[in-house]
Amino acid sequence: MPRPVKCRRVEFFPENTYFMPLGKRKCEVEEITLKIEELEAMRLKDIEGLSQEECAERMQVSRQTFQNVIGSARKKVAIALTQGNAIHISGGNYTSGLCQFKCLNCGEVYDLNYEHDKHTCPSCGSKEVVCEKKRRLCHR
Image (cartoon, rainbow, N blue to C red; front, side):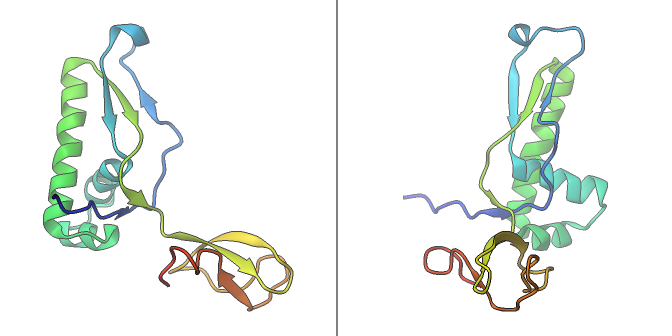
């Protein structure tokens, strides 16, 4: 039985998720799906200029896994550009690092970046907040 795929941490979600060669109709081109974590790997390495080790750390994966993800991403983009295929950014195995928190005082439920944001309710300023997923999935 194969090992389960570990979720990769992603910080960036694109507004535009579909790219097509100019002058071709959608029915005329093949579509290549670029996973969200593959885009994140290219963003960290090629745009932010981080080392492979730093990228792997940010995505919370091993260096080898990072190398596999970015290799797959680059191959897909190269094929799309050279063969005139469309690129659809979608799917994958990723997590955003955002948790939903609930204020115990006012009942407000909101998203929070667990590692960067403070644990205070944005509505009432109370410090009595709990992770909404605490009983089910959240391990923080």
